[in-house]
Length: 65
Image (cartoon, rainbow, N blue to C red; front, side, top):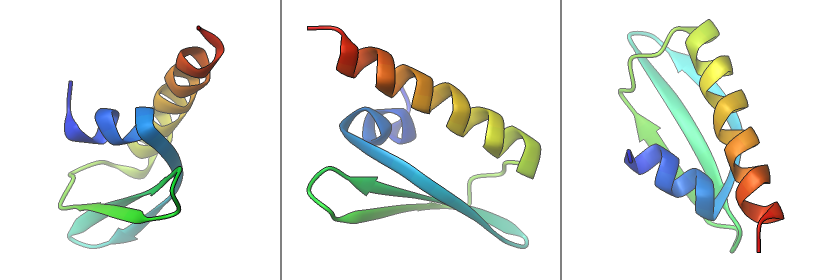
C-alpha cells in the first residue's frame, strides 16, 4: 500500500493542486493536520480518479466495524 493510500485511510483527501511540472496531493487528517505529497506524476484526470477510488475506500473502511 502506498503512503498516499495509508494517509487516505487515516484522514480525508480534500484537494489536488497542479503546479507544473509536479502535482501536489493534499490530505487533511482527522486530527486537522495537513500532509502534502509533492512530485506525484498524476494527470488531472488520473488524480480525480485516484481521489474517487481512495474516497470510496475510506467510506468503505469507516462503514465496516
